[in-house]
Image (cartoon, rainbow, N blue to C red; front, side, top):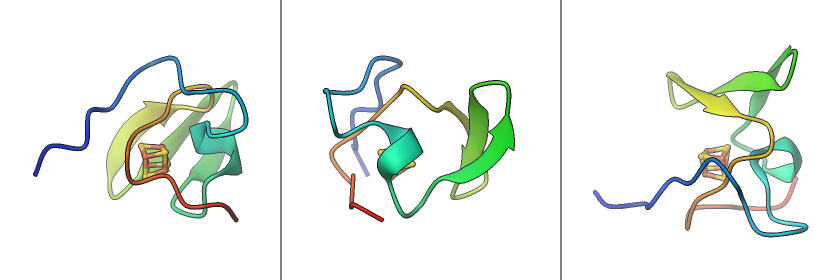
Length: 48
Ligand code: SF4
């Protein structure tokens, strides 16, 4: 599956605002078991 994760998500569509993001602090979190950046993003973004 190609979701094109980027470490710089589009404004208003970053991992921090995504319902799949589990915040772990310090700008990091988990998404489906993978370490991602709070400011990252991908095509699977879904708002909280
Ligand atoms: S689905 Fe995409 S936008 Fe949402 S937390 Fe995961 S990597 Fe970030």
